[in-house]
Image (cartoon, rainbow, N blue to C red):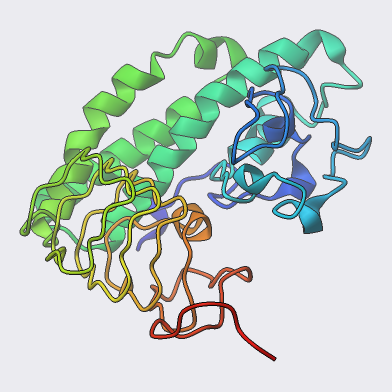
Length: 282
């Protein structure tokens, strides 16, 4: 990938050390399997420390906050903190707090688009499509570089709607969608072990708790697929399209699950091979 294909502002991986705990303050969350308590938007999580670090970071799952472990801002947090607001945090300049939180809500989807466009270019699409993707990447980065007022006037959903067809076309040319069409399908808790999913279109599919043990997902388009608690033990995700780290973190896998080289195997995954069931006995 050439230098001109790379977004400029702050990287596409979260760097919490350069953020002000924005994901711990800006969004609301409700008591559920993902979060232990209710928290209104704009109110700091009770576990956010004065240095903007999480006080229970190493115990999030055990303390009832698995939703925190799978959230990814795609680098939007540090861009808002260090670039858009020039390093001024919301505690020392409280008058900017609401604006900063609202900007973060726009920046996060822009950075998600930057990640998808970068991934699309890495699939080496034909020249014409590559030019369109590169132009969209540059335009998205330009929008993300705007000042707070410009960002808050951006209709980010409408903009995403203009970019998504390019991503869909890229996935199709890479083999995604050559198989079954399950776009947006509600596959919650379904046993999919005998379902052919090579090259399937699973964009936005709800795969929460689905049984995908041993399934080959080569060239399956997993854009926005919800893999929370999906059982991917022994599954082959190594050639899946648009698979993100946060999706893998939300799933349940083991040492036999095959992953793309850029994905880090989650530390909470079981070491049990797929064929074994039940608790491990000492």
